[in-house]
Image (tube, rainbow, N blue to C red; front, side, top):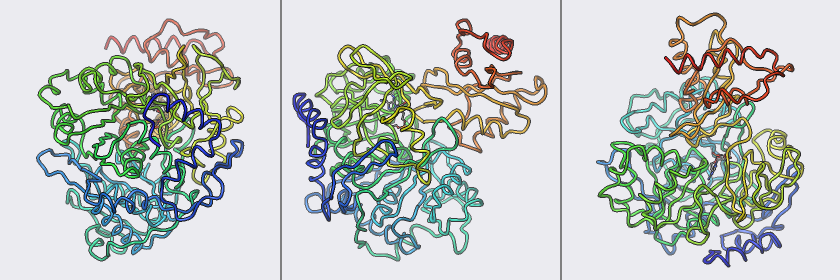
Length: 635
Ligand code: WTA
């Protein structure tokens, strides 16, 4: 299934469009199935109903673990680099990972878990996080990993939405020189989570934690009570594998659902091809397993290929801004997959942290999560890849399960800031606001997909209608990505960013409505409007316009801090606004809709070209807001 030349790519692409069922069946045959599927694909985008390999029986962990034991039991599956570089690396071979996963699967069973149960995982970037994820999959429980930066309230919302019965966490986490109290946060969350019967706590920092009798148990003690034999649960290809919450333009985050068969085939196929993985290569994806990138390209994609995947606990700038390069040097990393925001942040330290580091093992560089600007692209290419490593700018989403548009390393000619061409099986289409296809090259529009690929989301947990509305109703018969995109004269795709009210802050998706709801919860706040603005490091920063009940001019700084504390408490520190401007009114249309276009312009610092403001309910508020910006700029 590995593409080795550009001709082969074109041929695979042609086949995948002309005969998608046979194309994907051939790829799926390379995996281990207990029973063959009855139909390769059944779909319609109207309901939506999408089924790949239905009737096929498998367990994804048999494909990620058991089947590698014959040939590479002793090969490293996971290399773990701890936060503190003076502490020892941990290497788990395939045999060791297999044993641990089976043991922890038995621990889950011992604590009442069974097929179909939902299990919330809130953990630091340690090997046990991957073990917990795979152990759920082993017994057919559905994992819902919550990123370690979310607040108690966000955890509680996610646990309740999925009615999780077990939470797996750790006492604390270390990131840089900070210690983060994870169990405390879970305890706060659980005050409002009646479905949770058991909490399994890993010892990581050995900080003091409260362990509630009858509810909380230690990971280590439990692991001693079980054997390392745990037969894998037989799953249908269309049984749920996991839920992962992600922000949209309205309401609370949605639980995106992926299923076992299609997700496995798609992540494995894209991993092997995009990165051109060769056996023995060390793959370092710097994402957190709490995000889709970690699910697909730290855990499932690499392990399904028998690869060696590197898991890093810390942050790129601690103890200094050379940490990534030290890791590449120390572990002879061959593939480095990171985010533009990390590149821009490291770029700001200059090239000194790179000097003296041996980066000659690198073969392929990757970028994901947000559009990469030209300057960052070249810095990455010049200083890290030394102009000899292809850069794969991979475009995809939580909902797509795996990479959809990307160069194939060393095979597709790259162009800075372009995700280039669709992978086989991926059929992009650009449409205008009315859903009319924009054909030809040298055009731009809203990016949609007109045919399913095996990794596409199947539903949003507990609310299928929301899935239909969000992704399949804007344009009939199409999956709408929410991204704007241009297709240049060569037919290359360049993603220009979200066209909905979703922000991308340091590669994290945050809904403006979510941040507004959090701000509005603060006492004294009447209304708020949140927009994004260009930020040198984060890509987008969060700009909040806030109306308070009374004149607050004398204590603005204090209220600003209170609002930040509120947002941290409700969502998590990642959603804290970078700028808060107090205003007396918001620009609204006569029907009461906030004109975000105007607010965006002002936040970008462009107070001159605001377009037509005559349709506003009260055009004066715009003047007020502009004045406010000017005053702030002077302050
Ligand atoms: C953005 C992350 C430009 C895009 C895998 C998308 C990108 C959202 C790229 C999904 C890229 C991701 N170039 N933009 N290479 N990759 N995006 O769900 O706006 O966290 O819709 O998935 O990130 O973010 P998510």
